[in-house]
Image 1: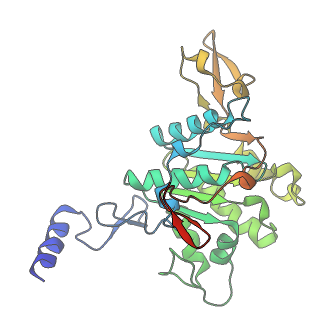
Image 2: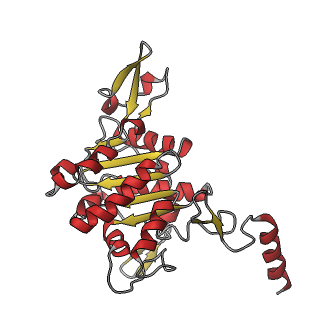
Image 3: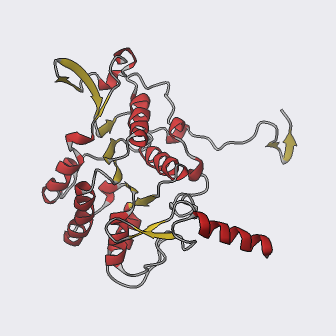
Length: 284
């Protein structure tokens, strides 16, 4: 008991929140205190996902154009200079979700609050109706307006499977308001998106054209380091512009991942030292 009391008093002395776990943000909203909150625990990532790192996005044997390198570059640039949107779209199973998960985990480990939300949970959080609890937002169950405000103010927000939304009228209004707000606050908020199809291919593309415009904002492109063109992956050859008489290459903040799914090639890890054979353990 004495040791626990000492730790609590130490937290109150060190943290600006006084041990409450919350601080008042610049706009008067409540934000989690990074010093006394386990950010990974409230990130909505699974225990396995919490260990994810950007370098887990490895270069595949069939990656002839360096998409893995481009994805790692975009993710690390977001960590180095955290602002704005990063949107990855393309074939299912080619590391889009892994990139979002890894960035959320990396931001949490760096002391910046980050939350991962997929399309189904986003709808549950923002739709009116019966009181429901969604992991990570138990303090405002059944209150879509409060949930919307929390999602608006979260420093790093990852929204996965955006093309799975029906984009009904209320979703265009509520989720659209969330995206619009975070776009206006893009200098201080990070928003990550993943989707399998380009928004122009969605059945209701006409009603979300204003959101597509936000996703494709050119401010969110990331310049390739000057003088390092020899390391430029081939998939970025087409993305270049003249800046002050110098050709600069960049990775688009709205990135198309074209590699096929790798899910069928994945295997569950089994330690080589103990692999079951015919009900017995075989040491290799």
